[in-house]
Image (tube, rainbow, N blue to C red):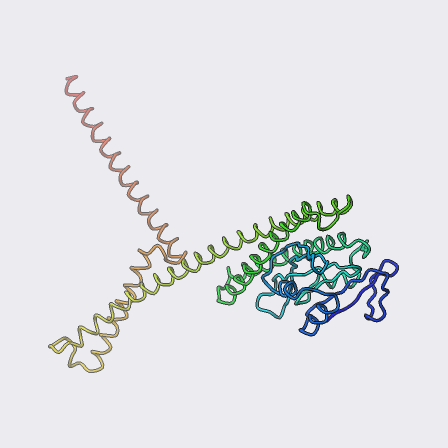
Length: 364
């Protein structure tokens, strides 16, 4: 879809191509373009087809170049995109900016919030009379959206983390994986835009005045901040994933230890029933139901005994059992200490009595 915009009283107004004022600068907004739209732009504004293919490439990096043959400047920057219907809701797309004559042409294979903000006149002090400043405004708005989307990704990751501490399922891991992909896309695109900003400062393709240089400095600061945030959130996500994997592994180990204890407890009744199932004379083999009752009681008693032994000795017992075990050990140590003190006191009394007897003998 191609839309034409011209500025009237400081606001962008949508117009048809036949209604355009040829003496004013025009913003040609091409979003979610089709083949017919691409052919129309190439023929109407004499745009090289290779440049159009580069703009429509989802993996194209940011760059700035001059096409001397057709007489236009090409700037490609990467914008953040939010699409709630896709598996990966946050990703990046290249935006091609072509300036030729009085036309400022933007081409993007999808739609995004940055282009919507420009079309809705949400950008203050916007002027089509200065194409370099208009280009810098796109970079500035892109950084604002990057920061906003990064905060939203961080909130989503925190929510998923809280869910994983309660119940760990595959859905949470898939969501974390998608968030990690989005952060990686943002980090790569921000680095590419940073290189574009440095080239804008050094090159003379776009003629920047002092005010544009000040805007460029502010945009560069915001872009570096977004890069640091993306890097920080990526590291946090990596640590979160490692911690979740360790938590799942630990829970699995605890479950397997409990299953092993249950298997060992059930092994004792199995041993008894196997013993009575041998083809040799055994007690209660002619007792009928009484024999079955006695064997069942023995199996239940051995199972309870085995469970009690494992519960007493296992460090993975319940908190109540562990508390009782600690109290039992503490009382037993106190009794041993008390007996030891009593023995020492009796021994001291005996030694004292012997010394008194020897002293009496010596005095006589």
